[in-house]
Length: 197
Ligand code: MN
Image (tube, rainbow, N blue to C red; front, side):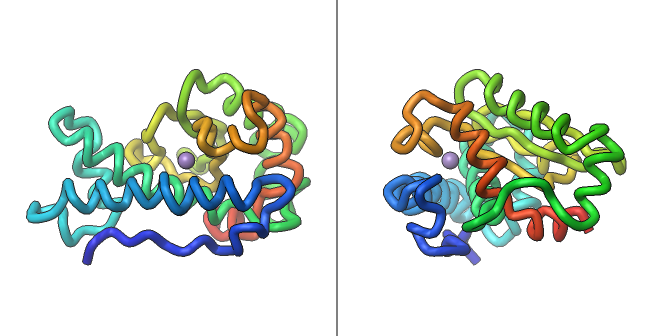
């Protein structure tokens, strides 16, 4: 049971004009695929070979001798989660349980947006900005490189990829514009609600 590259949950051009088919072609077809291929090479013949992604991530997290496995396998998980966090004609204020929980834990939707965009914009270099459930409370966090809330016992419910490969073809250096578009046009709130449930 090797690690698989899942199909995108939509067509490559489905997120245009916000994220181009060209970006998804490289991001999914090259970057995500490379993490899958490298992860499989690194776990082949080891006790990790037949385990699920989250188990592997938790087992190797913090072990410097297994950093290569962690980086590739966590990136496989993070990217699959990221694709599911987006949909065509998404974004804008949420509905459902997460809408009420955002107001309860952040004060307002606007305050959540401010914190989430700020986390993405201030992640120095490569990484991810997250909405997580930590001890029953929603929080915005950011992680560097491949790091993931899965390794820290915190439940992710939304993520945006802020590695340059996620946005450079479409936005060049304008990461804040990419983040604003993600929030206003792309977030798949039904998926976020399913993660919260
Ligand atoms: Mn990426």
